[in-house]
Image (cartoon, rainbow, N blue to C red):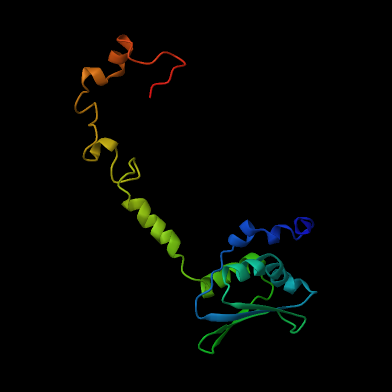
Length: 175
């Protein structure tokens, strides 16, 4: 496949496109990026276009993303909302990481996924340990109690099984 060769191959892979962090809000309809080919102040905007614009397009299929070269002396990003208003973002002398962070904070959706994962993490009663509600599995109703609190019956202990040869011989599996 010819697209797997060269410097642009990584940007065309599906895992790379899915790693995009910027998911725009539903009211953003058009996003335009303005920068020039030359100049140190435009380097962050050029890098953002090269590395992140394809991710933004992939993660936001309903948003029109347009890139203009050599139209204005300063780099900026302009987003039009469905109400007819526009948002101007100055990216003069910013790195591509700073641009992405700013766009995520200003126009990105709030990260609901992390909040729900945190709630699921705390609500799952099957988990136990020092970070959870239950320290030991014996605290869950219906489980075998701790041997420190109530000693096991003799036939449940490992010592009894070993002395009476109840373990399977080596190499043989017990089902």
